[in-house]
Length: 493
Image (cartoon, rainbow, N blue to C red; front, top):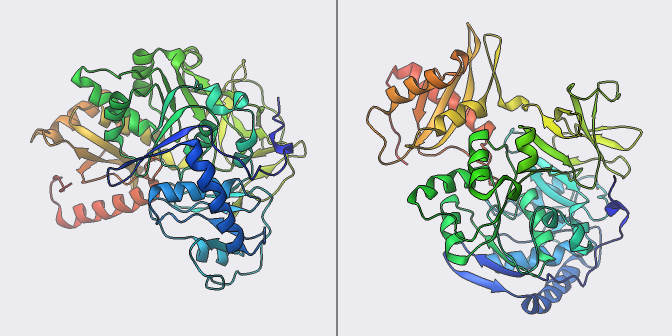
């Protein structure tokens, strides 16, 4: 079925969250924003935005991520309920995107700056009503802004119809959103959660090692997290202290390896674990409950208030089980979904839209995705999936983080190399033990030719491996290794 959300009008400018927001700042402070506090602060911020924009609804509002977390979040919530377009700054690198937007023809304002000081825009670009601009594509090296027009409609949607409700959130629950509010999946879940009479904990600077201790300390019952958080938490449960009051778990933002997923199914019960798949563009979402996944390993679920289609290059539906291009029923007219670096989107006459994902639908309509191109490494004609190698590396107890990349090879086309972040108690023989274990666990083509110990794996704020940065790091390390012909060694963390 198709959601009616696209037919809704502009956001209600008097919207106030029903949830109490508990903010955990980067400096260790905790601040509570109750609905009565927000009822005072949000109208003030909206009035400041109105004055700043001169009443021009085409001006794009940009909350200032350089401010203290509570003020930034208040500005963000205020702006999202206004009729203006809104651009979300990169909270990991809090510099205003005003100049970048101007280069793309968008006039934008950040509160606290004087009108006229922003750079003049290039040829003006008209944004659709309710547009939210979100950075996307960082992991592939094609950074741009996604134009999302569906997320802000959630502010005035009945909470009983929300995505958060569908994945187990209820009034009265203590919830934790472990990911960054600047990422589409986590911001969308925050806006849904804000319409519940719940206590919602948020991080200014998400640190995976904090999540399980905070779950235990605050009695968290419902968690939305990334696979990176879940892997760190899994290691932490080895202390035998369990997961406290945690009852429901939602993972999103990146693919979750099968061993990790099965661990959490066993810990909480598969019926209490959900996977959410979507995109920054907001064209559609799928949900897979853990018990559904157990019957169909690998699925990302069925459409949530939308239908999913898999089509051939001519735009015709393919039979169940056959691969093709994934499309969602969008329910709105075709329009650009990106600003910057081109718009590689396919629309059909029937109102379907696809952004390049491939997969298949099974007999029951559950979607299964193919591996994205940036994760594929072709070794002598054999396709190796980088995440499979990473899962194998992470199976060693003294490997804290890991990534795998492909490098050019004259004989096989590509070869696999690995990067690991080692724990302090890693054995001196780690390289030999890794090599032996990987030869046992992986096909020959997937065994890394070399594994480098590094201080950190490059990751985007969402927790995904930054594949573009990883490729640069891989080339640099292999050049150094060839130049010096030195054995692999630990780097300082």
